[in-house]
Image (cartoon, rainbow, N blue to C red; front, side, top):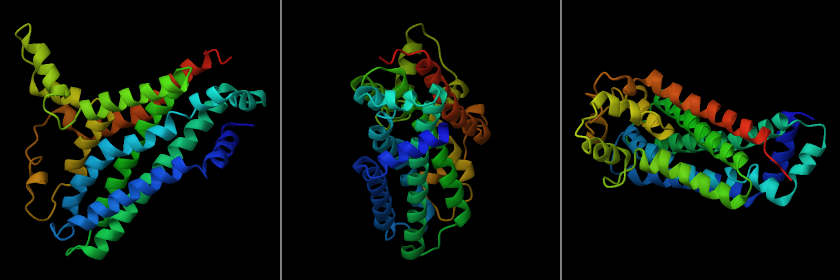
Length: 282
């Protein structure tokens, strides 16, 4: 066997799972309702992509969590990992197949959500959606999804129990998404950095703050949208116009933020595999 064979076996075991169906159905339903509900408020569907981005960053990772945290930890808890590794598989084959399955589900769900958003926008908005904008939105959102799946599967492979995997995944979501770029002013990264810097009486420059903010998948995802999706958007929308005069900082450069998400999508699984490779599975 090999990683593709492990992935096919794993996919057959989860394709009828209520978790998989629930993740896809819930996300698609929320996206469809969001675009349908805004069609009478905003004549241009590009304005609703602002709300869509919030769903992707703050809601979608929570939907992925039940699927991803069980990727490896679930097999270890059930003892089925001995079946996979009892066959002529290496740990690299096993881990690669598990990650591929979860990544495929996450990417397919995100792609389906964007397609549904486009179809709803095409049918209900006064102005037709821009296919190019939606295509770019889908690509960036899928890259974000892959980065979060990579982090979650890496955590699942790095711990020895389901409970630790669940707590680790929820902690990663909170720190890298809700806390890093979250809407609560009293509980976000900027507030903490300002408080820490004020103790010795120093000031963190705006460019440094922007760079730090771009180092999480969620922060990088939001930073790509103003220039790659919302630039030149029709209509006068304050929610989108607030990004027009962003300073020329590295942390706001689209290429840098795309690279950050790609680094998480590749680097996190690699770290998870290195820990799994030497883990005691008995």
